[in-house]
Length: 262
Image (cartoon, rainbow, N blue to C red):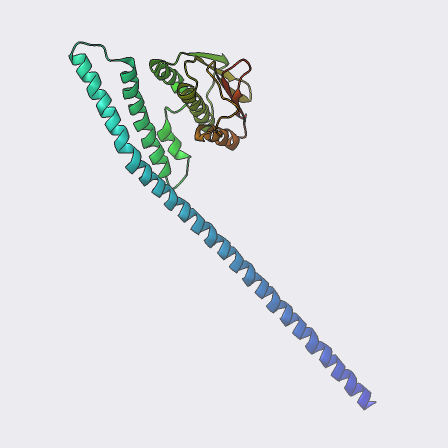
């Protein structure tokens, strides 16, 4: 009897020790898992911080390159155009419209380059607060843009339909850039052409359409240039749709539909 009682005590003690070991092992395992999770979170956080730092460094590098490569050249163009206009007026002559367009385009390029560099150097919020510096690169400047195109020899007509209203800054700027790039492409590639710009304000979208009656694009033309690629990227980033291609009967059409939200 004593032997049986001793074995029972031995087994009970064994189970108690086993239970204690299991509890301790489980606790150690939980602590290990928590440590692994903390290390993973720390690694992810460090990775994100490294990526942000590299992005900031790359933006600053691009800003320096843009400043060093473009600012001087644009300034020289603007100064030379200003001197030519001044000399023409000093001789009692009217400055050629194309020369005035060059002068105005130089001033506009300088302003926009300065705004772009300011956005690139804004380390706190890319494209957010920096957009305040880009004031003027929106549909509020459409008349000025069209006037410059006309002075450069491109006949342009403008039609605005729907109820005008304030637009989100990114939509407003994207619409302006699309019209700007489309008119530039007409001047460069369409030959002797006329262009029309149609801006339509719908309830939940803004549509901009630019048509021309130029020579259009042949089937053997090269791949789309950076201008069209940039348009597609802008529209895609806003969740919109873009059509760019030859028109029936000749010419070319660019149509962008940009959602404006509630």
